Length: 325
Picture 1: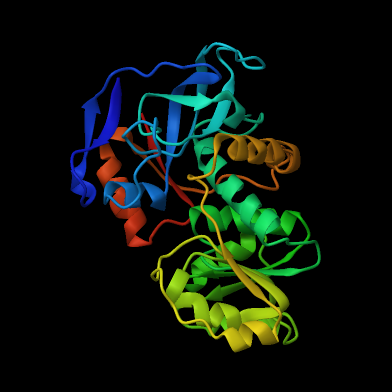
Picture 2 (picture 1 turned 60 degrees about the vertical axis):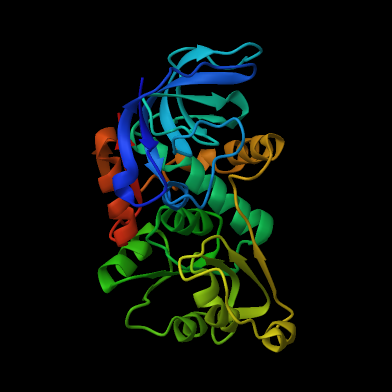
């Protein structure tokens, strides 16, 4: 079968469409004919040699797919060939076929395009576990989504709004900020020309955000702490501005706030299965009724994986970039 392999750590030019041995489902696994694969920043890190796949995962990238079930491995029940699914993977999504743990599959609801659905599993699972499990976001609270135009951010905006939170979302440019409002944000902030902390305070009567969902990392640490409300929670899910920053512990203590960070790929199979089950129960009804939907910037052929990575690195996409075999 065809898959996008990495010839050596480096830039997008190190990606190539190659012939690889077909994958086969093991116990508890399902073989999926891939309709599309989501492109994530973790894939860029893997390509550069900074985020190796976990043991047993394919060497080629791809953490989420949509498609149809082709075959079931031993011990799998509840699924059948032909089922429309999305899957959260440890790797191997950039291919014509992929193997997924059955416990990490979700059905594609009627009315959701099968190709576009690949933009959901990684983003929805990341948004839920960080907003709710880590951030403890509740209805009526305010969340600042840094990077509301991103693949995860565009879903986080919709999810938080659907759960009854007030959303302040940042994006680069007034049009992108306005699109965040169209997705459900109460306030869209152009981080290129506006003071984000001031905008949060204006939106909350000076109180600040109860939760900050952050993709900036070290470079955004100071302002994110300043933007927090008393008892606020800063949840770091990205390092776009570096992994190191200076933290004013006095400011953190004065607000009785806390900082945490998470990753998804490194979690155990049991943890991922539990997360997918929770997402199926709590979020999938919102997907089925249209309150949460995939936001897709571009669909590109599998052979243009290098271009897809360049596009994501450019910061241009609003939502997801997908690769279509």
